[in-house]
Image (cartoon, rainbow, N blue to C red):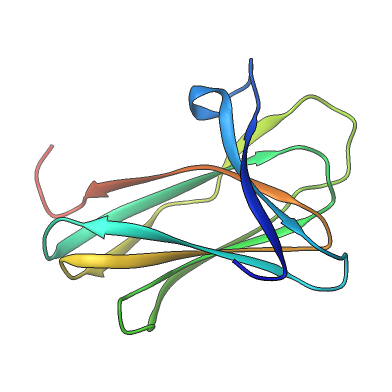
Length: 130
């Protein structure tokens, strides 16, 4: 992580998985914060990824990128957490279907302006019948 800090934060009684979300806090409103998470991929294949953010009314802007082990950009999502004094709510950021090799991909989270929160990213095989 750089430009800020990432911590799990309680969001009890909300849509957040297990009542928690990963919050990324920029150290200043003018410098984006970044955090990188490992995403294990058990086998070569086509995968559906569906991230979900927790909107907390911070006014922050978030980006989530998926990169392969070599650093190539494979997918990207963006969202804004509109300023609000309403209750927390979740928003799914849309499904991306990506071809991923076995091994470890990277999820790169970015927050600018104010903190953002990521609840989860569902990863499911897209090349197998359900």
